[in-house]
Amino acid sequence: MEKERHVLVVFPHPDDEAFGVSGTMAAHIANGTPVTYACLTLGEMGRHMGSPPFATRETLPFIRKEELQNSAKAIGVQDLRMLGYRDKTIEFEDEEKLISDITAIINEVKPSLIISFYPGYAVHPDHDACGAVVVKAVERLALSERPKLHLVAFANHCEDAIGQPDIHHDVSQFAHIKIASLTSHQSQATLITGVVKKYEQGDLEAVERVHHERFWTYPSK
Image (cartoon, rainbow, N blue to C red; front, side, top):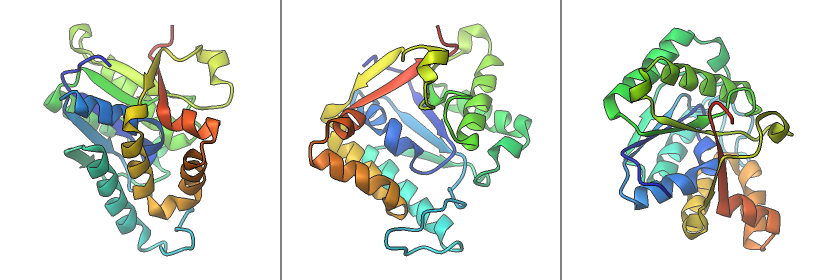
């Protein structure tokens, strides 16, 4: 994996980092690269309350905040930013404010690489809106100052529209960290338990999901 000056990860929800990029984040940290993780919301509107349920609508944001902090600690992230936007409203927020907030972080940490979602191909409206404002923030920078963009896409048949992933990372040596990141999000256990259990049983699809992470550059080639 190429050595970076600084990596900035921007996602809208706690657990977004765990599924798709926690291995890559851990690999960059192991390389001695600082990683800043900016999470837009606390996922307080999520439907999952634990299995069996232990959260309520009132307690969920506090629980998910702690889970996010635990996940970041498991990965090794020392710079976690929680931007305080409301879950499931990113597409309706003031776009200029979002771009301004992200640009401020870019100007502060000066990343050579930004990781986020590929707008239009990340399934959830918050994912797509987050990726869109990240792309716009980068496009407003002078060409000489623009960091690389590595974007996550997982919509059905996204390869038909944007091609095959440009970047594949084998993060198998960091699988234990990725599992720790995933299992930090206990309120989301109905999403996570199946993946972790299948991985532990040697299910090939689950092993592939844990051991390999893929990204598209933007715009797609």
